[in-house]
Length: 246
Image (cartoon, rainbow, N blue to C red):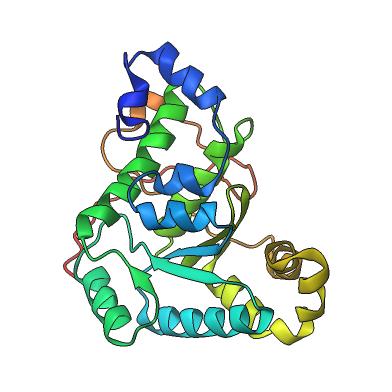
């Protein structure tokens, strides 16, 4: 229900599998009908940037730099803040700053942020139930990377143009790359903004990484092997008890 709504009727495993077979990784899958404005921007072929995290310094620097680069590249850009999977006081403070300083768009209703992340977690659980892994399922790999971004407690962004031209990145790497825009701006007109940005990001992709995937509830029934979305190696399993009073 969280993923497909009434389309999933009669809500059987076979029906869910059939819906997945028809699906591809695209921005509409991420947002569904949470924000109709985003679906309209996709239809219009605008560049849409969804970004998350709660580090105010990074949010300020990223949104300012992203808007400057988009203006120079002459690409119509819409930015929407989607917070974190557990939207507490830090996310609410970030929303207040974003609104006061007019840094970007954001969802005024925290329930929309919660629903966005519940959908992603539901996609992961659904894929696991159907025996998929990040090694053999592109959608699961994309979903797991976004969940890993959220687990890292750092900023991140997904940038899309239209329906299927989608790029995602960890926040620091993306900001560093955007800060060096003058070194790769010449490729934008020839290749398009997102392909040019994707190529420019390649030198920032290092082998060193620390990926964390934090999933709520009981996940033991899905088996012991979870593969890293970055390097495809088995992830170490830890038990985490957390009390965040931010």
